[in-house]
Length: 591
Image 1 (tube, one colour):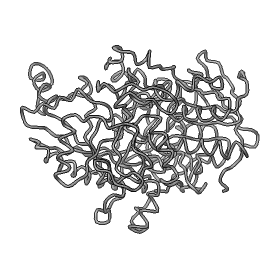
Image 2 (tube, helix red, strand yellow):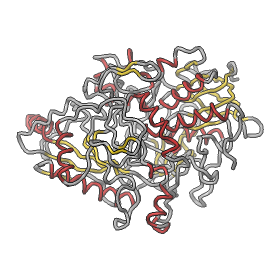
Image 3 (cartoon, helix red, strand yellow):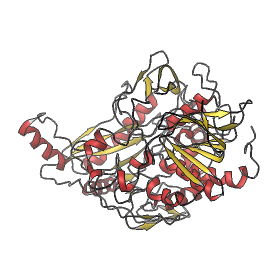
Image 4 (cartoon, one colour):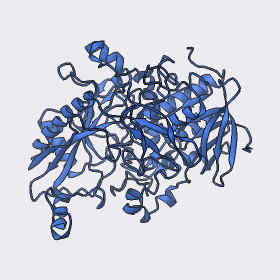
């Protein structure tokens, strides 16, 4: 029999960035908040302690701070007619585990959405006509505009101490920034990070071929910084251990280095680790959440009553909890009805491998997760898609985030697999090989979705989330075109050889091949409950005291990393909870 805890105002499920934001904003509003995190309590001073944190074998290869797949994983299949099989090791994406979630091990790329990313369907129809959208593609608008979110983009950048170069401040163009960005109300909080040698060569070459390079917005602190919560961040040491690791000097923005130090000071907040939430509890009407039930570290079943339930876990886990809890109608790919699990998207990476001439010294070891040089000339709707016959685009950048010897080093092509020849090839490759990356958007399709697996269950007997996913022609066209642009830049860099690395048409989705951890959709936002799970304030259409945060809200995926938009949406939602919902609990948008 479940043991029942003391009632609280709000329960937060998942303590990554969105969980930390929700807890901080709600406690500031006077609410008592309990946060449930199924992993351990990672702290910078322990989990990211130097020199232990530089153990590449432990963190990068064995996934010390990643989800334990023997307890819970996901299953994959290419089509609805296939039988799904479990992912037995971290592959296509890296699921975080513990306090900080994926925000503890991310690289630090902190993008705003393009204005047209948020009005995607309307923009495509206005510019190219509705017939330009292929059959089965389910693109949608977000239901919020860039202007709606601009103050929250700005605030999240200030919380994270983002290092960057503005390109458009209040409509005035700024030299050296991104000329395609929508107007910003302020400059970035900090100056951009220094570029590695190869990134500087990329920027020079991109300019020569007529493109518009700029520094990536980076949640890697370029100096000492104190954020609006009074939390101090250290200065990035360019150690090359960002992605897959915690930051030992608190220079990479994470919940631990930006929000939790302030949050832990209030007695209105309680964090419970090793708390695996099984489902959201509903009253007899099915229209009101009464709390959640979880398993604690001792294996006890615990009920946590609450007035508000905030689902702030990773994208896949949010969708799974909705399905397990019976909140919303599951998506049916056969007739297109239902919403939960709809519009799942990944990203399609492409680009070019660039081998510089013999005698080049790239010295790639000194860098940070987001110390990149970028162009947006072929991202979103920044170029004419009409003659090209595809929707979407890609951010293109050079980002050598370090040179760790196990996972970030590669020998020259044709080198032996062992011995002195391999050593020589590795030494040459270390200094001469680099990559120009095409970070591609992916559109949603009716035959790509999430549901509960009928066969496989987790360690607690609950069905796993099942992913049905394969690539489509639109994305192959997009990746081919954007990769061709990376090759132009590679040749202008003076490369000895340039080899495009994009996937060829017909290549099936491969669960073992890592691209990004940027999965989106499944609990999407919108203005129509027939095609979305949550409204423009991230509030469930079906159970109004449930809010769902994170990239599960995205109707399609962008050519950017999702964290900047994820954080802005969380601040947008919590603002309206405080200003509207708490004064009159109930639906904030009428169906």
